[in-house]
Image: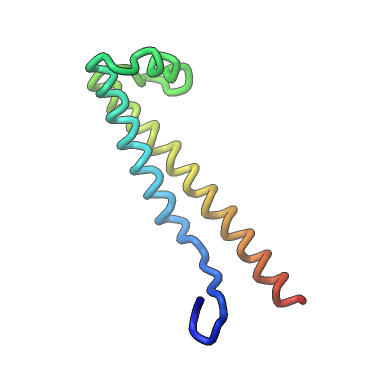
Length: 98
C-alpha cells in the first residue's frame, strides 16, 4: 500500500521482463544441452530437437539451444508484460468508472 492507504497499480517494464526471461531461458537451455553432452537427459533433448533446430546434447548444441531459449523466453516475457499491462489499464479504468 502506498501512503494514504491507496494501492499502487504497478505496470511491468516490458523490456526488463523481455530481457530477463530471455536470459534465464538461454541459460537454462545452455546448461540443458551441456548436461546432455555429459549423458544426462539425452532422450528429452532429442525430443526437443523437433522444435529447436540444431539443439543437440553437445557443446555446440547447447549454444544453439541458448539462442533458441533467448528468443523463446524474450517473446514470452514480452507477451506476458504487454498482456499484464493491458489488464492493469482495464482494471484501473474500471475502478475510476465506478
